[in-house]
Image (cartoon, rainbow, N blue to C red; front, side, top):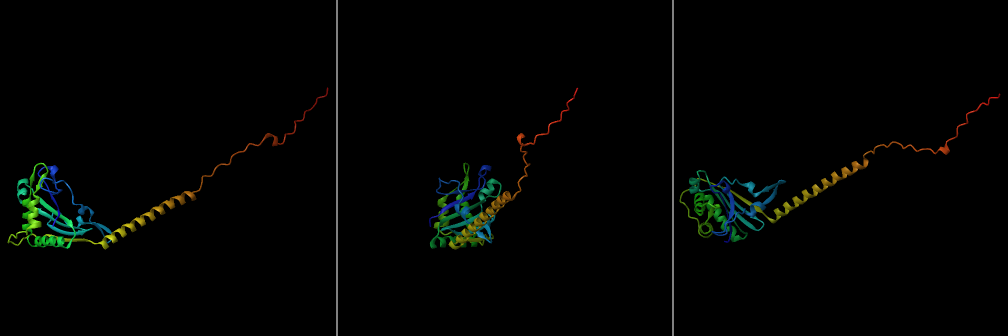
Length: 240
């Protein structure tokens, strides 16, 4: 099974806090978050739910997701024993395997899920051996070792019943579920457009109905020719 491998861990320095790296090979390991962790969104009971809302990365969890033709197997909170002692604080690893959806790939990932449920310690140890300290990037991963332990060979059972029982969660995003999610988004957009139109219409109606300020009547000057002449003042002639 060919799969993209991502590992989340940390280094000693503050700038090397927990982050994801895509493990292309032992030399090329850029910082990159698995795209499916950002894209896996669906509508549940009218609310937007992300796949990352369904698990606690600080507690042992196993997530198997089928989203848009991609399969994801996510194992979280795998304690790194050696680096925990070196750092003086608890260090956890998380690993994500992403591959195309097929019956064969799904069966292979389900086998890992079943094994992790039964013997978490063996899975933890297999990942811990592959992740080591790196002063430049905080940590580095031996991809070949992960491929041998998880993808090619069967994990070796420790022989002891693990006291840690991870929380197992499945995420299914079928075509019908995705169609329903898109319809819900379109419905919300339609309702939003109606609300905007109602607000704009209310503002326009208010401006039209708003009473205009009464203007004072203008005084129109009357031409002098239209004014009746005043009778002349009588003049008394004094006779001598």
